[in-house]
Length: 116
Image (cartoon, rainbow, N blue to C red; front, side, top):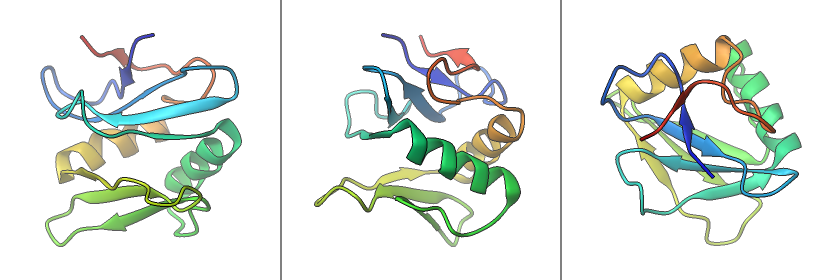
């Protein structure tokens, strides 16, 4: 099971990564911390989150997105007690958002670039 990241992430750059560990769920991680914590949410919650990111709205549902002063962001799962907080940079946000707007990283069969 391979991770996928946005095709807008430059070569070697870090980014949000996703994979489908089993039917009906998506796992979210961070390429700069490949053995670090991950979030696993139902596909419907991930799709809702991606739709909101693409539209530029702030109601993200189960996934909580927080913006940092330097332009980076945090991501956590409010539906899971003691959920880890994933922390991303501004460059990672930019690549992720562009990928979402292009229809990448959708659940089931995420498109983008395979993470090596």
